[in-house]
Length: 241
Image (tube, rainbow, N blue to C red):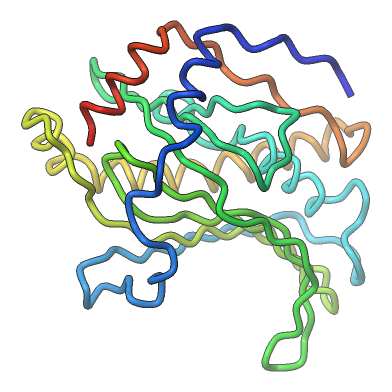
């Protein structure tokens, strides 16, 4: 596994600003978050190269997609980029998301709420191997809710696919300019994030399979660089509350 450059003090400051932030919604009430109660529920999916029937192949599409997900390289970088500690256990990861739109840059905190790594038996008796995780919005985020990314393999047929499932609602936005911008463009950007993410993951998996890759445990991409102080990060969090 390649070495990673150490986090800068600015990067650490951003993560520290959200280390103890609370969720801005109640994950225990997920069953109540439906369109009927004012929440958006979204699902996106894309096919990946199939494998031979049976468990996921060590260097196949399923394992490649798992690494892309783990490294968080699939979101469109001109819209969303993640800052995180690459050597931190995934189920403990806090991420700062840098969002960009027009001339604005926003910083939001999310926390991994659960990691899935299992073989499921479906109601029709078929079995699928599933890996993925969700993250949940923290205080200061313009949205509230959860998004889950999972890669699936149907063991009997070898079919492999990537799935996004999310539920969300507009959060509290104190700045009136940001509130108006999010009201006008937020849903468009949300759909763009999902559509480009499934496309980019599919392309990255195809590239990994074409070039070959050393191991399913290939090193994670280093987190992006940030240029703000702890004070700036804390002020952004407070301003968005």
